[in-house]
Length: 127
Image (cartoon, rainbow, N blue to C red; front, side, top):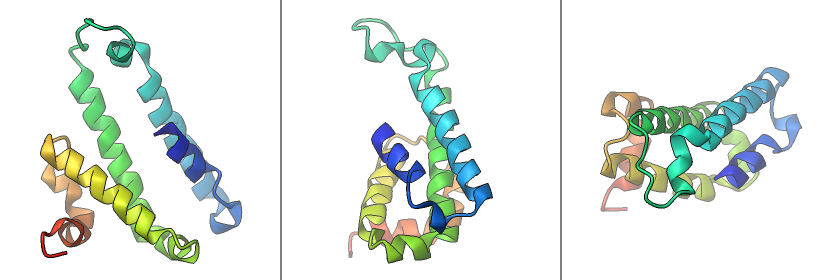
């Protein structure tokens, strides 16, 4: 949600370099802009209006970018996540995200490769 993204953007700046803060702002802007683009998401506010033809393409692109944010956090910023004692929250959020994109085939499996081991661990039935 926008609130979660905003919380991520406003996390303590001493955890990030200036370049990482700029990257966070750019990602937030791009994702927020796409999510609020009326021509793509107008169906949310107008009952009976069909989704635009490019809806799935835009939604898949947004979800792929969100996956890359998760991958970046896990690969580059997991120590600060642990310091903030937020790893359980991050793992739960990511697990729900993965179940959703896998259920509806919204991200190509090859795109998930950077976090495949984690995905298998979080989604295994033995867990």
